[in-house]
Every structure is written in C-alpha cells, then in structure tokens.
Length: 328
Ligand code: GTP
Ligand code: MG
Figure 1 (cartoon, rainbow, N blue to C red):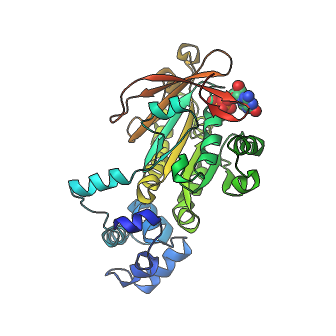
Figure 2: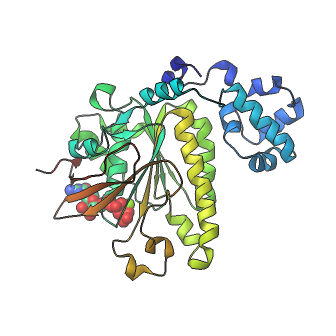
C-alpha cells in the first residue's frame, strides 16, 4: 500500500474482493461463498485465521490458507523494510484527550495503528474518556482530531448521548453533527461483540471511521466465563478478540480504545483470578496501557504501564461538566 492510499484510508479499486477471484486457487464458487459469508474486501479475508475462513466460506483449511495468503500478497501484507516501518510510524496520528496533562503523558494523545487499553476501578473515568475521544476524533487535525467518525461498542449500556452533547458544546461544536458521526451499538454477548468487530473490517472503509471504542472489552467475557476453572477458555477467546482489534487498528491506521474494569484492591476479589494478577488484559497484544485511579473530587490520576515507546510516568486530569480537562 502506498503512502497516498494510507492517508485516504480508502481501499483502492484493485483491492476489492473481485480481485481475489483473479488469483490462483479461487474459483467463482469459492468467490461467491466468500461474498455470502460477508467478506467484501481483501482486508477482511487477510486478517482472519484459516480456521475461521474455512468455516465461513465452507472450504477446507488448506484452501482457506491459500486464499488468505493470496489476499495478503495482493495487499502487500508480507515483509516490510525498516524504512517502510519508519514511514508507517511517521504516518501514525494522535487524538487529543482535551487534557494537556494526559496528552503529554501519552506522547501527544491516543495513537492510531494501535490498541490503547484504559483500565481502572469503577468511576475512574474510563467511559468519560471514551466519550471525549468519540467527540475529539471529529476535530480538524490542527485541533487534535482526525476529521473522522467513531464507532462505540457498548457492552454495559453506559453510553450517554447527553454526555456527547455536553462535550461537543464544551468545545464549541455543533452537538447534532457530532452525535450523527458516532455509531453506537450495544453488544449483547461476547460472540456478538466479536461479530461486530468482524463487520467493522468493511464498515470502517465505507464510513470514515478513525476511532473504535469497546467499553468494556472484558465484561461479557467475565460474565460468560466465571471463575478460575474457566479462565483458560476465557483468556483464549479474549486473546482472539484482542487480536482482531489489533489488526483493525493496523490495517486501517485507526485508533482502537478498549476499557477494562479492574478493582483497586485485588485481595478482596480473589474470586476472579484475572483481578488478582493485577490488571490489564493485554498481556501479549502490542499497545499502550493507561491505568486510571480516583483522586480527590473530580480529579483522576493516569499512569502509563509498560509501553515500550513511552516513558513511565503519571499525571492528573479532571472530569468536568464539559468533559475531560486539566485540573484547575
Ligand atoms: P465503570 O464503568 O463503572 O468501571 O467506571 P468508569 O471508569 O467508566 O467511570 P466513568 O467514566 O463512568 O466515570 C464516572 C465519573 O465521571 C462519575 O463518578 C463522575 O465523577 C464523572 N461524571 C460522569 N458524568 C458526569 C457529568 O455529567 N458531569 C460531571 N461533572 N461529571 C461526570
Ligand atoms: Mg464505564
């Protein structure tokens, strides 16, 4: 993919699924099966596992492998040179949080092409930050936005349009316009949550989506796989979901923000072993982890946890009527 194409975030004509049909090993029958299963872009095919594609397209795993590698080749998802990596890095954009302190801590804001996990105790501001980012991604570049739209995957039913309205007003933006560029969906269980993300591989292209939120990423998984005995199965499925999200961020150079509620006193929550081991879910996935803690009044403390490219540190921000700000 050239730099120009990356900038637009649009899939050029030759990357449409039709071009898969021209590749060796993909006949018209397979092509129509792929279409029926909802794969309409090469990207959608390139990021699934052979096992998934095998089920979705009703083809043997070996055929699925061939199709996926054909798609990856067509998209140039193969080796990259160090120079290309540098160029990608320079293409990374940032979304402001509306708090200078928080932006500084994050090295300028929430990054694209990457997963950001915001974790912390209840009331620490995870959902408020997600709301703020859904507004801020729409700002022009010189104001810290990407002129893009947001997708808000809500698993706990805590999205409030009233907060979006207030935050838009707080920035002097037209609330109705801002609200019309945030696509909200309630994920009803973990399977649905994963299905929605799968669909985003097409939707992100159709609309100019530059931010995807999953608030919270863990609640359904915790409810459906309770206790120590289900931990392995839960983590395996969650890892698959995280992987999906990482790919989404990388393929489209967009920001993906996930939240995760973590108790501040793991010792009193020994029933849940992921709490006891202390925190974030992205043990293996690349990305940035931000831990939030409640402080006095409307103040909150944010801390960066093991981000390879960011210095460790912490800062204070505030949750106000108009959204996230620096404290007075
Ligand atoms: P859980 O989802 O329960 O884990 O918490 P969370 O980390 O998502 O917390 P959330 O972002 O919902 O923060 C809730 C806090 O934000 C509240 O305790 C309030 O302090 C603040 N807050 C929420 N709405 C408003 C509002 O309309 N005005 C003001 N001033 N503060 C608000
Ligand atoms: Mg919340």
